[in-house]
Length: 223
Image (tube, rainbow, N blue to C red; front, side):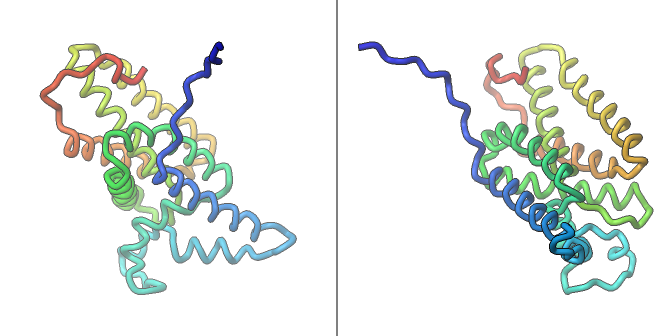
């Protein structure tokens, strides 16, 4: 009796990735529905932005809407988005990049790194932007995952004495992408948060996963 050959199955995303994507997706679905003419409840999204976006002015003497907002905004802004396309783009990258990070760090470790990348992105936005404009979106935290990936790739290639041109090309590609997006959206791009998240992710990867003593296998390299 012959047995049918099945193609290898793709592992499902870890629950922590699905939870983050699910929460962001659920919030955006609610906001999109309430924005529709049928419901005409646009104040729901506005209220979420007022309470959850990153407001630089709160660090410069503005009155907060509730106790602790100056702290919670460093995390809550990363779960809000400016539209369905914005959210979808970020969550697709999160799922794609998050698999390896979860595999290396575990779910709790990944969540900690992801949140810290979001904090690093917000700090960089506050320091480098200076306009007082509110910020929202998971892009900064997602760029933190790019930072971890680039660091791990360079780390592995150095252990194998291989050139690091490929991860460096990725960095150049990210820079070019940010420039193009900045032009397309008329300057309304929080590139400062992207930079802050990327650097935070690379630094955290260096701290949490120092160069191991054993040899890497070539199969571990990201192609």
